[in-house]
Image 1: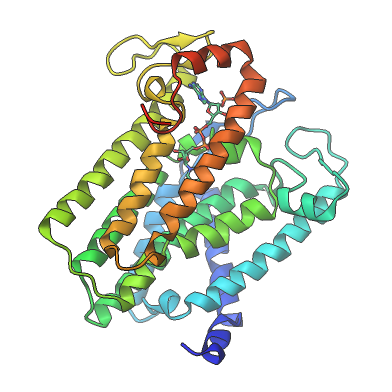
Image 2: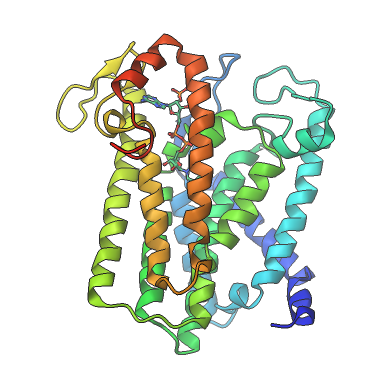
Length: 369
Ligand code: NDP
């Protein structure tokens, strides 16, 4: 691709803006009307709790169904997203910049006192725009943080499906593409099946909504996590049966650790006496779980995510580093995040955290790190 062509492909367009806004409009509408479990979020410092309607799975399945029917009846093109990848990327980027400046302005002018909306202004424009001013800003009654992360995860699947459609129409479907699509598809469906678990994650409970989070959700997740699919459109990979089996094992073990660890913590927070792997849990200071995955390594859930991320890239073979962008990025992010969370927990739990560290000395990688 020459520079001129690249520049043209990267130019935002009104068509892309219309596609993006239709997607947001769909999500805002179905998010408010479709049934879903109403999950209370963590208790905030002022004692209040937000409530999240977890109907992401239903919203996603309905959207895929509508798009499927639309493409069968020639109302929408199944390759509309894949044909406009870079154009959609730049349009979404511009949207993220715009929306975060609006969040900055609204946040700075807020007089709210609640934990969700109280403005945190350092006075440094870049810092405040990047990290955000308010914890849980809303637009027309919609919690924007929960909305954007949902949009990003769904966007990732929509990009993948469009790339798959392009691959099939160009008669290029390969075992690698099937594995990549299968693993990511299962991961995203699982994410929405357990959407309520999201309500207690770091992003939702601790981060304010600024450019870092909005860009991460809307641009980074869908457009970079799908690099493998784009790469497979123009690169051929021959996989041996042993490589396919090994790849499936990495996915299955990764899934078991990722989902198992996150589930154990979630259940523990709801009921600290709930058995872990069939035995009463080991609890430190009445607050921290030291059984199951959380007794093998602190943040063992990150290990599961890293194995899953690797399984999404392994179908691309080892001839190029490009499809390994996601696992490499995730490794850096999770090591950084683990350190930040470690500091947060040490501050919050004090002696109890020190005792947990003594009992469970490994971080992320059991018996190594
Ligand atoms: P966690 O879900 O691990 O949450 C960390 C919090 O859990 C801590 O702040 C603490 O909060 C609590 N906690 C930690 N240890 C214990 C323990 N032993 N017992 C009880 N509570 C404990 O972190 P994240 O929100 O960062 O990650 C959630 C998932 O999302 C992970 O699986 C991660 O891999 C994934 N993720 C994926 C990303 C991606 O790009 N694919 C990016 C980031 C995360 P408290 O104050 O409530 O006790």
